[in-house]
Amino acid sequence: MERRSFLGNSLAFGFAPMTFSYSQKTNNTEEVVVERYQSGKPHKGKVLAAVQPHSDDIPLFAGGTVAKLIKEGYEGYLIRTSNDDHAGRGKTVGEVIRNNEGDNDKVAKALGLNKVFNLGYRNHRMDNISIQELRGRLIFLFRLLKVDTIVSYDPWGHYEENPDHYITARAVESARWMAGGRLDYPEHMEAGIMPHSVKERYYFARGPQLVNRIVDISETIDQKVVSNQVIVTQGPGGNAGAGLKKRLEKEGKYLPLLGESDDSANKNYIKHILFDIDSQALRGVPSDKEIGKMYGLEWGERFHYIGTQETKLEAYINSKAKRK
Image (cartoon, rainbow, N blue to C red; front, top):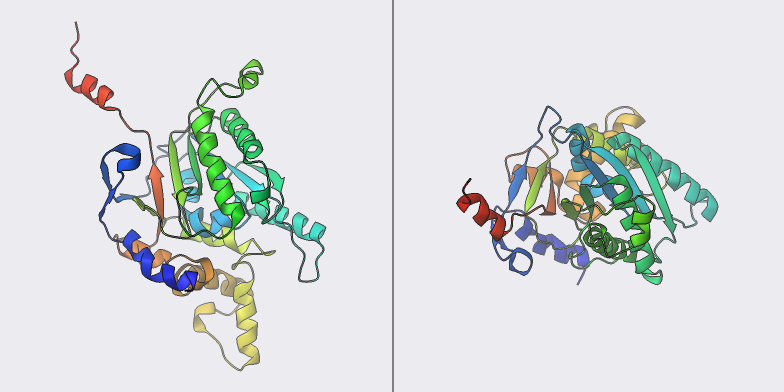
């Protein structure tokens, strides 16, 4: 069975506003929460880490959310775990690595992120590396940067084919868990880099996953478009719109949707074809417009969200404790 056709039918469970069992992690149930844009920079002083294996992962699946959180006051960093190396289209491996690094820098700028960290592991070979080494490097960065919120692939997502995706996801989650403890990497503390607990996680996936948060990206959809347009070395965005426009011109055809110029063709292709009309085939996920529409939004991204949870003891203290 084709993976994408299977997902096209099975992923529908993630769209409707239904209750999901979350008993394995929280012993309760959670309903889908719609997170809307908030003005006035309510997250000022908080730190975001967007962690991606390749230069196009965050832009494709979470670019709108990252841009929204930055717009709401976060300070942000982009961490790329692979070096995106491959040869093709008349380019050597070295040229492709350099070009992808340049694209990745442009992604950070488009989304409003302050700095990029490239960890440099071989593309599509990350299942051959020491996950403990990757975890240790991420723990260092989470502590150094004092990360409050992570956006990355879901370590509990299903049917992910790309080893870079699932290795990165597992390393991110285990590093998040260990970054706040004092037992791991005590040499960090000797250097003045203290434990720091990550409070929130926005995890996305290309396959079936628990979806409990829909983020309204209507305010930042155009930033998401630009973050995909600047990736010209790989990915389904870049100059694909201009390429399609040129192909149709040779066939004596045109699509009004693409507009007149190459720039408008690229932007409109990404916004209306990549994110909507042909999203399932091009990204392996349903349309951002359709996800948003089901929740009364113009555009939406979906996530497995995990935040700080009040323990039963703290809830009991807050409701029962009295002042002397």
